Length: 464
Image (cartoon, helix red, strand yellow):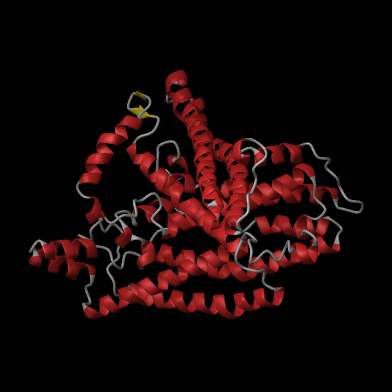
């Protein structure tokens, strides 16, 4: 009974915090990107008009990241309390709602100490280099998670996932810098562990994402997410569309349209039985790649059971042992931001982005009527055809939020369940198992994909 009450508190806390995270962020983006340019400047040829719209993605990320990090700290502490049947934060504010806000204020006012013998410049730059790429890596994802809304269309890059991977590989440099500059042997060992870990686990992580890009024939995160629209049978996690159209194929047969069903089948599986076997292989391979991504992502962001760079029982606190005050807060902020970013990448690349995961045949026709009726009621302001939010942005954003925090919850579950690897076990697992497996699966997918018709532009339902 006590744990049931904690579950209720966890849900209430998440609802309240999410409301106070996303409403202000979206409001700030709308004011800077639409209200000021269209209602105050008005002249679309004015350079300030373009400048305000270019600022929107950066402003959104800078507003969102600190608030979201505070929420995720509280989310994790509450989640761990649930798994271990404890109370969790319950002192500061109603049910502990303001605990992390109080912690943030405490960190900001703590003394910033630089240890004797430390390299002052590198010691100061390390947390910045660790944190800054996390901010910039999230920017191309804004277009994908908002259904390419006009506020974020400017960051819809043709090579979006390449940019994300490039930016997310930089933070390890900050960890190594911080470990070396601290003049502390424990910090140095933590930094070196982080470098070795990044080299080991980035290969399967990148291969898992490249496999999805190969399925979609695109590096554009918006295109990749859009190709998965239409329900669970279109998700790339099921073989890059290997099952695309199977729901419509079943529906056509049930209604007696066998000729149209056969045409659909022939278009989707041009090699007949061989194509079906290839589709099954792709389904298995992409699920394996999804598991490899989750494993590699946990290792990249130093989450348990891959938190060897910190390893409190061995290295005190690892690379950030000597940090305090605002510098420690930046390291802490970046860790939770990285968790959110890798979860967002998983949603966009594997779980259909903002697409509704419910199969279309379960939703038709009532969902279209519902979205067209209820959606416009969320249009709080309309002028010159510009809306604060509409159904084409609202519903995808809600699905993205639900899916992303589901991954965050899964990461919290892993932390509360699994013990830490030894360093030799971590390296052995990466080099002897994950890397060979990812290479083999990638090659199998490359050959199997040729036998299945998953070309770009195939509409929902599989009709070419």
